[in-house]
Length: 280
Ligand SMILES: [Zn+2]
Image (cartoon, rainbow, N blue to C red; front, side, top):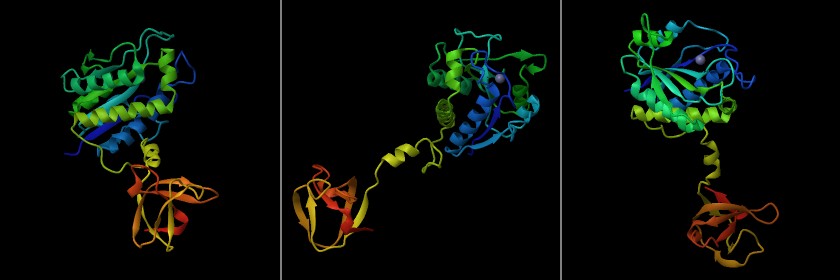
């Protein structure tokens, strides 16, 4: 089964400026977040569509909900406000879920993820709201009309300064996207596809992790030394032919590069100059 998710950046243009920090617009935050979340969800093989292609263009709420036809989940991303001035006490994340209960489970899970990642003082929760024609919120009414489980996910409050400043950092939005994607994927029993796509946050780790490789010795007698450099004592000699596995690299004296041999991995005292080797 291919899981399909529809993401809606809650507002367009420059909308809902925070009273706590004038650099913050809810519309900017949710636009970034929905793109990060799309990227993260796709790593699990989830098919992601968005309700708008351009941040500058608005689209009617009910229509945005309707675009989730055939989706397993519709999420409209937001940050909340209480009144129009700063309120440092209120910071609970909330998912507005469908009246029919179809999105209660994933809604609560995601509200708890937001609580945990941001570290809000108040717990994450779910709520719903009935209007004259069923669902009060247009996006939920639209999504419900096409049978998609749907939520409006409020990422705490931009009337709270601490939260606003936290949400202004792209690195934090990436953390949110990662955790939310993981939560959604596990809800549908999905695991990450092998081989991370470029741009993922795992790249740093990949680079730090050295991958062992094979070399061939190109001279007849090659000293093995106790450390990476000719200033270290010899610890043997390599005279045969064949291949070595290098498990670590280090810079020696001058511009030379040295490699640690796998057979000395426990004591780390068997190094050869890579200048006399060829990678195979
Ligand atoms: Zn909003």
